[in-house]
Image (cartoon, rainbow, N blue to C red; front, top):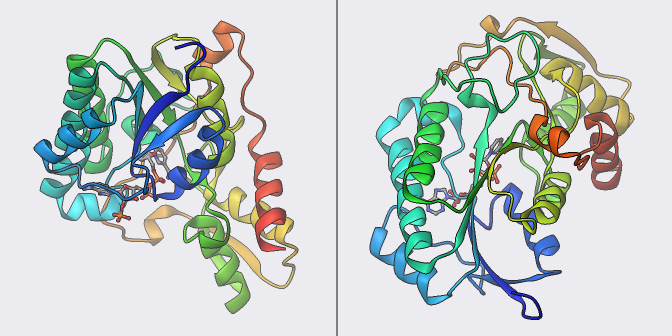
Length: 288
Ligand SMILES: NC(=O)c1ccc[n+]([C@@H]2O[C@H](COP(=O)([O-])OP(=O)(O)OC[C@H]3O[C@@H](n4cnc5c(N)ncnc54)[C@H](OP(=O)(O)O)[C@@H]3O)[C@@H](O)[C@H]2O)c1
């Protein structure tokens, strides 16, 4: 739509990724819902009405049940939100003739690969979260022909409102002399702002399909925690590497969910920097 401002509807806009997406997407898009109030994606009529009346060019579907342990304990709720909720959003896209953007996770892989996953490795999720998110992707593919699926992993961001891994490590390091952090699970730590910027840049080309979109490199949780404390300047708290078996968590985590942005590479796009550089910028810009 050259010359006119494009319209984008965002679900889950108040979540960690939504907070990074909104300021970046405002550069080019009129964002809906205008009041940034979430609608419950479990209610099909409401979702379809609300989205269609905004007449969006794109729908960016971020809303999800993201607590992997809660998904394992409440699988019906996980499928209601991550699979059926996605179906409602996809049906609205069908009716509004909008391009759908779905976000998926490295948790759809079984974790047995010993190098980073590419888009050509088959999903084989081992948790309810992974299975319900993969079910959402299959629904998008079944109902729509114009969609993007972006896979990402171990996101950090949120700034002063951060309640996730980075903020938890910094809070705990302020309270304790020693932290015990898992060193046998690997992922690709990814800054929400870098992810949002890359998606923003890439959408324009109309190259629909499935893409990994992570900061470069892979790391264990232990290595990420070490880097956080280094960038935050904590030297009084030591970090001890421990096996994941030490924590008896409800949901299984893949041993490896690190990814490579292989489709971007093949197309000649270099949109993501190294995870350490991104993490350093985030930690120093937020916590110092
Ligand atoms: N964070 C990661 O490391 C990561 C990695 C890979 C993929 N992803 C995917 O990226 C997307 C965004 O994740 P995020 O980290 O921003 O998650 P988040 O912070 O948990 O945000 C998810 C948002 O969805 C909302 N939501 C939950 N149930 C809903 C429902 N029934 N109806 C409407 N909204 C609902 C939540 O609202 P409430 O807070 O009120 O429940 C929250 O605002 C998700 O699709 C997630 O699966 C995330």
